[in-house]
Amino acid sequence: MNAYPKPQTADIVNKEIENLDVVKLNNDQKTDEVFNVYNWDFIRADVGGRTPDIHQAELFQFLNGYKDEPDLENPFFLERDQKTSKFLSKFFVNSRRDLKVLEVIKPDCRQRQLFKTCLKISNSKINLDGYPAFKVLIGGMNDRLEANYKNRGDLATRIKTKTALKYVMNVTKVTHLLIIIYLSLFKEHESEVLKVHQVENTLMSLTQMWWDLEEGIKPEILKLGWTEDVTKILNFQEGKPWLYYKATSTAALYSTASNLLDYWVVQTGKPLIRSTSKPRLAKSIKRPAKNHQGIIALINKIIFYSNYQMILGDIKNSDPGLKPDFN
Image (tube, rainbow, N blue to C red; front, side, top):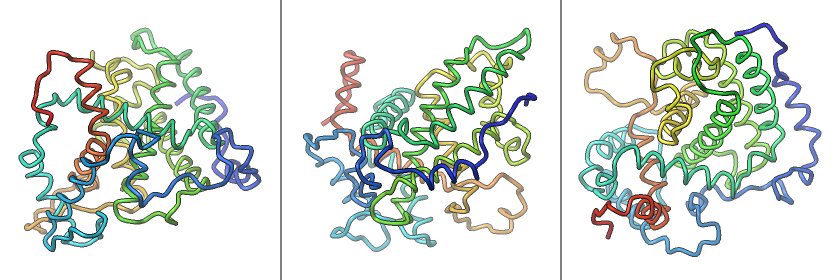
C-alpha cells in the first residue's frame, strides 16, 4: 500500500532455492526429506512417540466406520467424490454429538490448544525458520511493516511492528502445517515423504497470499469477510476494538490460519465443494468459492485426538477448575 521497494520476486526465490545445498539448511536436516506424510504420526507433537496413540487410532476407526462403505482395516484417507462430500456433511453435523469431549471445552480454549499444538509440531518437525523461502517472507514482510508503521495515521491501532511480524510468522507456520494435513487427507502430496522443495513451494504460495493481504486491493481478497482485519493489522490501521485481540490471541490466530488454508485450497484449485440438493439455487447465489466446511472440522478433530493426553493435560493445568469428563 506504500511506495517502497517490494521484496524479491518468486522467480528470484526459485533460483536461490534451485542452487541451494540442502545440507546448508539451518533446519537440522541432513537430507531433503522431512517426514512421511501418509503416516499420521507426523501430526503428533510428542516427537519421541512416548505417549500411546490409542485416541488417534480410535478416532480413525470411528471415521472409517462413518463412511457409506465402512472400512475398518485400512488407514483413514478421503477420495474426491460425492461420497466424501456427503461424509463430510454427515460428520460436520453429527460429530459434536458423537465426539463429545471437544464440546465440554470452550471454543476459545479449543482454538488456543489447536494453535499451540500445530505450532509445536511445525517448530519441532519442520522448522520453517531454517528455510530460505521463509526468510524471504519474513524479511520482506518486516520491510513492509516498518514502512506501514511509519505511515500509519493518527488513529492507529496499538499493534507494533514486532507484534505484527510475530503474527505473520506464527500464522504462516500453522497454516503451512494445515495445508500438509489437508493434502495428506486426500493423498495429494507429490510423494509419500515430504521433501524440502515441497515445503519451499508451499511457502512461496503463502508468501504471495501475504503480499496480497497486506496490499488489500485484489477483488478476490476484498470479497472475503475475514481479510479486512488482516489487512488492517498489517497496515496498523484503525479497526474494531477487538483488532489487537485478533493480532495476539492464539485462538484468533488459529481462526486466521484456518481461513488462510481455505483461501489456499480455493486459489490452488483443490476445494471440495459441499454437495447441494438444490443446484439451481446454489448457482443463483454468487458467493466467494469456499472449501467444504466439514474439512477444517475434520482436521481439528484429527489434531486433537492425535495429541489427546497432551492437550487435555495443558487444559487441566491452565484451568484447574475445569472438571469435564475427559475419560
